[in-house]
Length: 203
Image 1 (cartoon, rainbow, N blue to C red):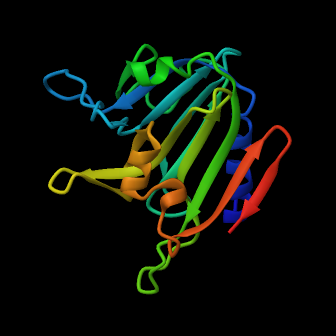
Image 2: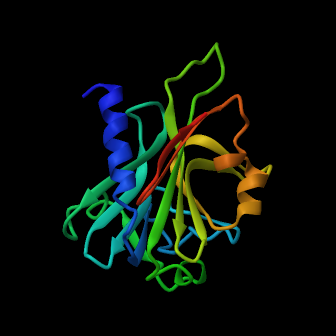
């Protein structure tokens, strides 16, 4: 499959989120020796390997990272039953459905998704376009953003193209770390927004 075909497949999977309602959320992380969870950074969550969203219809979506387009980018896989996923045999799965950030949107219908496609913007290190961020909009107008990003503890800053999945719940946090619509224009190549009646490409 060439990159254009991969891109079309990604678009279709993202669009299939629209109209779904989330019933369960789980994070996939590395298993640490002390057995404790380290995904909660207060203003964002770090799912490391990915996020599993189960819908009220029983469909399972797994948001993770991959390197089809570039090292690294958002990936989205869809499964029809539990146990088919990418991580169950090798990682720890944390059920975060009752976590306060998620309780506000669990059960709500997804009405729109927005993909943020970037490139490096660096002639010395060129890249094809890759999906850096995914925004999910719920019927209450609440939003959740997923980003392939790392966290620099020395600066307190997130940075993109990393093999971890960060979940951001607040637009001010998104803006401060320059993700989604706040990505510097030399990197943000285009966006694609989807809902039941609209497909728009802008750039």
